[in-house]
Image 1 (spheres, rainbow, N blue to C red):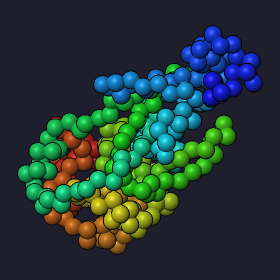
Image 2: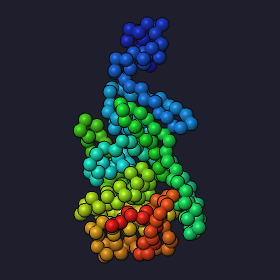
Image 3: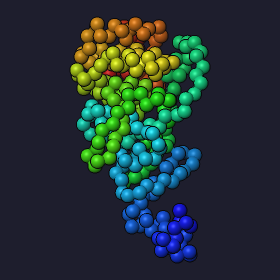
Image 4: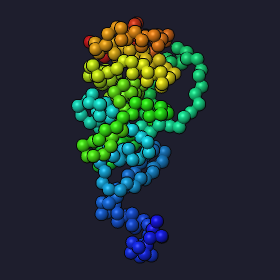
Length: 261
């Protein structure tokens, strides 16, 4: 573009593209964002002076807000989280449908859950990038933010599923339970079940979701019955690497001691 339009733009031949970019950043026509991917770093150049939420969606095409950030946008927590979590789905992958065994569940949840190290610092905020499984953007909705930017984020039911699966990105299991309790009559259990069917998780996360729903006191036993019909075949866990736990016989769930009243 530069070489083709130097004469039209009045740019001397001695002025390099790097100098032009530097001047655009200096004059605040463009911002440079450094993306720390743990093992490597990348740079992104964005026109204008966008806010951190707009930057978060521009770093990865097709991304959307998720987990604790989606909780905030769904008005389930009062304050914006310190880290803005954004998800960019991976390409569709072949899945091995190995039969699930109790021992493999126990071993997987005995250790800490892996967490993303991909972070961006921008205008005093941190943006965390997740590479979630391909869901064909299930439950992703849009609304206009206060600054006029379009915000893409998961709806109520998809958000509740995501924070159940990855509570570490949501403030922990106590925060997850508080979010469930805040849903009130807005929540559709039927939509939760439909989403779970589409997501087709290997692990029985529906048992954790059923446990949370029961703890809210907002859902009747009749509403919970379809969740139970998905199967109660394994002992499962609310989170990884829990120390002191109790066991709920009805949902076959290990949960942190002191979580419930």
